[in-house]
Image (cartoon, rainbow, N blue to C red; front, top):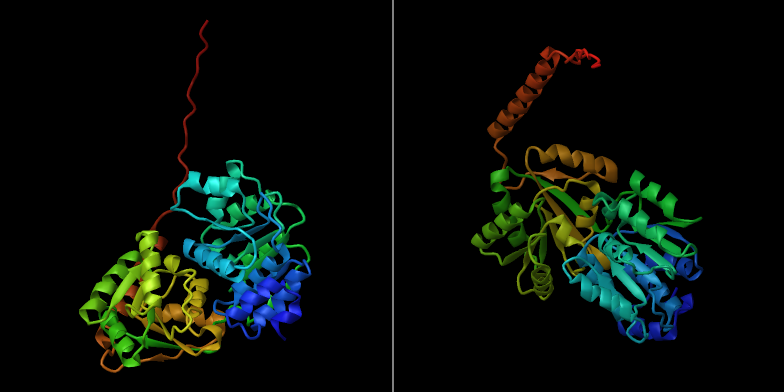
Length: 415
């Protein structure tokens, strides 16, 4: 199938051709006809599958160049970086269309955003909390025709469910809703039932799975050796670009310093770093001005690096959806990739839970020169065992508190 077969706007097809899109990806082939037919959609789609074009191209085609003072499409995404990425993609796809795209995120002056919206915009791309602020201040969304939720699972993990439901209440009753999620959780199912009307369900991959062309491997490494092991693996693989994930901002900054000490050019991005600095570092990383980018999950959304060969989980994430999104940063657009996890004694148990949900075994190996200390392993296990036993004994001995009896106060009537 070709893009010409979908009945897309001719001006849109012109930009598609210039971008070198030869044929639609699987998610695009399945999604574009559904959007063109004005049906609601629930799709499982991983990063790197061409998801933005899957909803962006038919959305732009149907909006065409008919300008309206009020927005006709609202796209929600969990983070600033992803909002920026979607906005840039839509502007690129629709460069021959007379359509205005506005980005509403935190960190920008509220008054200037309000003026921009007041001047007139066709498409709003925003984080849930920020667009809700504008709606509550009087901005009208009653002419919305398209409501898109990208990375719905991540937005729910971040606690945006109430914001999303409030936003939906302010939209036109007959709008079309498109929901995309990398994982299918109970929260996502519940939200889909509330927002979607007789949706078409498109499953582009098995439930809660990672990209097939990404080789996943884990190495058992003591915590104290993780930084050196990380540097060694990057050097051994001779990777031009490596994206390394940490769980916290502090560990991201500390790891950058350690990697620099091992001779690697590394920078970090996380929530405490100014947005302008994060965007500059991402741009420099894409341009290969340095070869290692250390990121927390919150700052990594929207990262689209076409030829990224390797992702390293320096620390395992707290949630399954974050693991899948991390792995999905490599192996994009059909390319091969590798995802490496460094496991300390505690994480070796955590990764088993990930394996159960993705229904895939991740090989655990010993990295030569970084063998875990067997004595440390035994001590840690004994310590955990003693803590567990003490906790159980304490709970058995601890008497249950009985509710204190309250004495009734005598009252005397005054004549």
